[in-house]
Image 1 (spheres, rainbow, N blue to C red):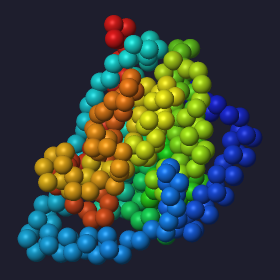
Image 2: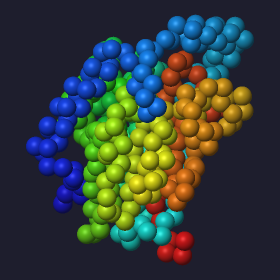
Image 3: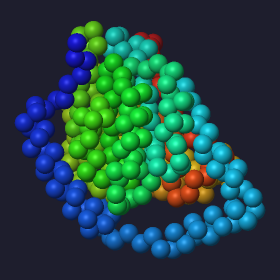
Length: 319
């Protein structure tokens, strides 16, 4: 029995995907940053990369690099239960595996570490919120083998769905069939269980590749319960205004390197401290910003453990 379907028919989706691929390929090739604010400028990373190399040198000099590297390979499982009055009864105890920011090529053999962590977990659906490779540009074929291996362990009864992050390329959309991971590009999918339905909407990355199509996709009407998948917290207010109940994102890594837990040195997001990591609320909408599975910049973590997240939805009519 088919447990999910795209809202648009195949012909419409194919036409839409071609338009999106052309648009995003131009943004990627020009190395332009296109954000929701409308600001558009060339990315300058020279100073940041210099400081990153300097920080890495200091870590090695002080002997902390090895500890941070060990931390980066240690992944925690975070269990969360979220209660809703409007959750369709059939979805009571429905469990989501949320994976974000895999950066699966940042640490040798990292796919095996992730697989060991998730292979015995039970979940109804798997949702991924972007950033599958280490680099922002260049080749990505080297991540296909580990992604294929991981994909075997994240197939779920109600589907496996993903959005792209700012480290990803539109070319990855060519490998959906091989991985069994369905990409949501400013579009929605309807999940059905026992005749009842919820909606999941996934947008393109708004951090580097924002377009108005992302906002339009969050304007889907109907459905008692709606979930938004976005790489960053940037569209949370728009999702809340359009009646979404759960917003899943990542991108921040929780800071990855924190002075103490919850106090990141740098988070690469500007929406507010409450969105840095973990559970938050915006009106009646609940959101979760994952600390991420992988690492970016350098393969270390301090006071900010990597995580995979299991979210159990519960119906509570008394809320």
